[in-house]
Image 1 (spheres, rainbow over the protein chains, first blue to last red):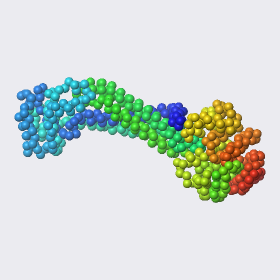
Image 2 (image 1 turned 180 degrees about the vertical axis):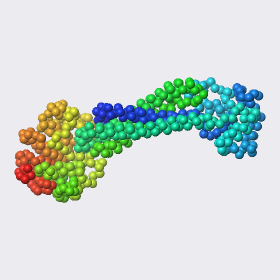
Image 3 (image 1 turned 90 degrees about the vertical axis):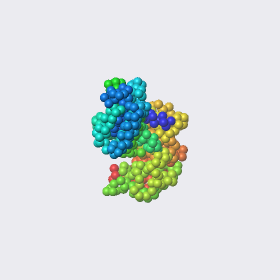
Image 4 (image 1 turned 135 degrees about the horizontal axis):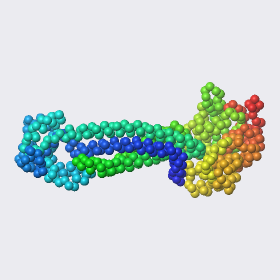
Length: 304
Length: 233
């Protein structure tokens, strides 16, 4: 009975303040879209980093069947060559630069590749023997990449020495700036949303002061009086958050998943499944912001 | 049922107190008129009983409990035990008579079945049988006030406070309202009615508590009220 009553009150409140409610929905929609976009950018960065990015700086790729580099003219790396390369890594001349190193076999490489490109169609066509085995080296001083490059690129069986950070860091810088901008816009929009929710609740409380006055007099509890107002704000914000989630899902699915992925097949992209994380987070964020903002407003404008 | 113990209420330090050292007791089942001109402190008295305001000095007891000691989350419970009626009725204009009365039960969580049973009963008590589905604007002033009284007593409060309930009504209609209040009082509800209508007070011959400028000047059983002193008019 009381639930039905509260739901009825919420319905009438939403109808009475329709234009304000619509503006709350739109403002939360825009602000949470920016929040979600920033989240997606960060997840994309993680996706591109792959397995090794945070662990090592330099990759020494060894020759495979399909290698075309001049140093691989003698065919895939042999066991002796691999042992020789590892011995060089542990030799006193090199050891001073190397913090740690790890060996990645072709099977390991396939596993990591499959994780990183899980959302890409090419994952099914790649086999272990197409991927080079490698030594992944973490340097004591990351700036000393050139030294390692010089020593190893001339060794037989080494296809190429790559400083992965050099390539990716520029891209990540751009993406990090983009997510900062998105967060900045989001913060401003969230402030707008909070103020707008507060104003809406104030209007709503004012237009229903007759009802709330009577509720007070006949001894309705604080929860029964306040809940319809709080839920009004929360419902509007949650609708906005759902719109934001749907929009971001559409971007992830159609723009990133269909278009970008076909334009850049050698880049790992996030899938629309990331919205399974971001979507609920946005809804929760919207609900909490609206709830807090309405409660604070009611404390000032609705005497109980 | 209601006891004031040396109660003073000061709204503004620079003007005289709204109530000045008032001590009185209204027993269960009493019918008391609170008389005096505008500004004599009648409304303040009612606000203190409801804990809408806090006494500056002294203590207000309702049903044996010092209202100053009731924590804010228990105030709704206090108010459930007190029905209130105002001069301006305060009905919800977009709800029917039935819905207006039912509203008071809905907001404290009464079940639909209980509401369907109780509301027609109460409407009968106040003489509004068969008008359940009218809207407030379709009713006369007297009928609207009866709806307000029905709403005030539908949750069976021990006390009914009426703040100038006949202030907007003509004398004949007012007497009808008084009959309703008397009937409610006969059923055991303590009734306190603030008024400055001397005709009504003299007709009813109930206890009269007279306030003048916040001071209790008279408390008389079966009293009369000669109206406001000349200089106050």
